[in-house]
Image (cartoon, rainbow, N blue to C red; front, side, top):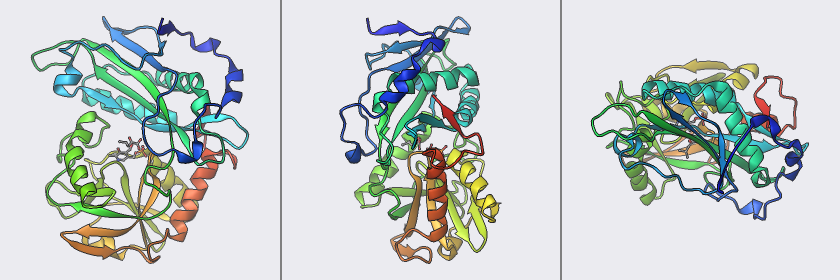
Length: 357
Ligand code: PLP
Ligand code: COI
């Protein structure tokens, strides 16, 4: 049998000591899918959620009329679990991902996943695959990907009557090779990521579908990351394809304020830490012209953490960014070290951001 019904209370906590025991080369991990033991699944049918099951076969059987396949009725989340200095594995801000998924399901007219169910499903997926959580000291993490899609059949455009929620995990290393090494970003002037009053502010598959072609073009030109501008004016900064835009200037931490940008949980974390470090947080429109004046520029997100951006390619012009000559700047470095120390339980979590699995 590839599926077992699971009671969330009966999981052996001794599993935690097995973190990092899978036979993998932990120092060679990139951001690529690695198969693990199992995933967690729950189906919504007849107006209610069914039992949570653990599935070992990584294929799901989906109706050919599923709304997710035809009309993109699907959304997802992404967070990481880290093995701490003490060997315990903890999820980072899973409660925030639960809330964000609720904004996505509401916009996609999908049933809500209650926060406690979401958090339990994520913890369960991590516990059941605990061997795949990279050990402390390798810089890696277990990436947790909750996904929800309309699995019920419809031909006319309307919400499905059945939904599938799964949580899969996969061990990851750096998203861009080299971790804190700076990257050059390519400014998309020909394509938009999201419409001004569209779905850019929620984490739905369709936003990523829109980015596939522009991102392929960007990579074929040799750049690992692309920056989107305001879809109506092209004058202000939105965000990168898979991360938020953040910058520092004097004592200010600046990030664009736009209704078509995804509210990043990493950015929320960094804004909190930055204000504790005495910086002033400014959420406001950021013009393309002012990017060259910032002291430090970076991309932030779960996958990329903080990735310094030290050059921008805009209309064939290469613009040097920041004051630190293709190096990470001191304050983004400090923020990075601070957040990683909390994630790795090297310092006390005074914020309630980490969750034991
Ligand atoms: N923006 C986009 C478009 C993303 O895909 C992500 C990744 O999740 C982010 C921003 C960063 O969000 P978070 O920090 O919650 O991972
Ligand atoms: C994440 O940072 O969790 C993301 O979802 C980015 C992903 C599209 C690679």
